Length: 200
Image 1 (cartoon, rainbow, N blue to C red):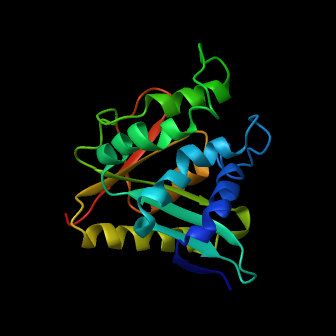
Image 2: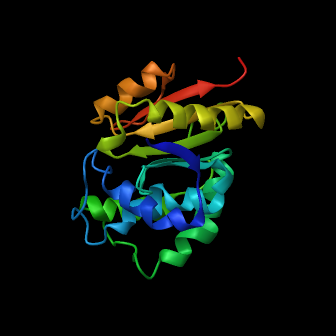
């Protein structure tokens, strides 16, 4: 039976793997980019590096990591660190495109344009998360358990709320967040955001 446990540094490679295998609106994005690890460098691994205490994984019976949740309790502080420390270390691997025309170039540009003050929901909902589950985990309540584990820890810390952004094409994820009681938040065109408050 699968179980949820805290993230360990030895899980880093698995975060890259699960991230790319769920990155295309919940489907496998392997091979979409010239470097499959770009997804993980943007949306999974920096959170586990910065906040290992806000990261949990789903471990299968055979020991494989088949899902995770990663988060920050302070979006603006996280993206300051991302801009100043995390992404500069990857600049040689991912040179900034002169013009971001392809999907991959737009993702690389996303890395270069992160910083504090960009997320309009961060003041009221300062935390944010990324959660990814391989298909074999779904329908077992593991996603709900991951989210509840994170929410309980954020509430314990006194964090006032959490937001998340997602690809609107991932309708299954949207339904999942709504079942958890998250509400739709204002979002830029082409995106979808949800939020939840703690202690209200």
